[in-house]
Length: 265
Image: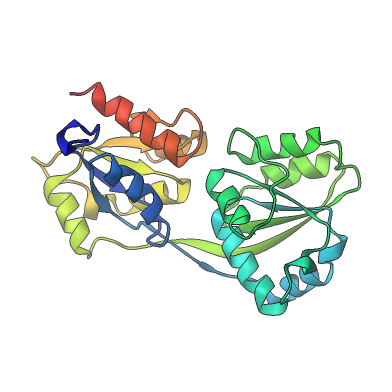
């Protein structure tokens, strides 16, 4: 296919994911002809309380479900798991539930089966899907989280009479980008759109807006959101929501972008 016929040919798209996560979304955009500007507004790193980790791993065989809310959770949890165990069978007979395609792919990449994944990639939907299995009454559930995870999932599981433990394995922090060459390029030229895949990226952008927003004469980017929580963060920050993914997910976000920009040609 000729580049000129690609749906995002000639478009500048800013991506705000953490540097270690940006490549998947960037790759999808480049494949459609876009010029991608990576603004890593957040930084994700491992952060685990050693005592809590030890307690959970000692009890691992006693859990009925382990729940992953992100691919980061899968990565950092299994980093620690394989540091302490040399056999995947040490997981025991627990079942795995997760949110989103990227999280599921991280699990299946370890040759493990995802037994519960809702069609809608939200904590509320995962809680409902787990409740529908009819397996939660007095079940022991280990939820792998980051520092910014909401309590909705855990609360709904506990209301369904599950016994829930939480294990934080990573933290998400704001990353300063104003001094980066890519930020200078974004200020000078702007972009056709800027994509937000998390509330934390939105709040980081808003906090740095005065030093990174496009200058007068630069193209004002449309604001794209991956889902309801991110859209709400944009509104709370006084920013426009120009388009939202039909369902939370990178492919759906890209589809919403293509649709919106095609309407602007």
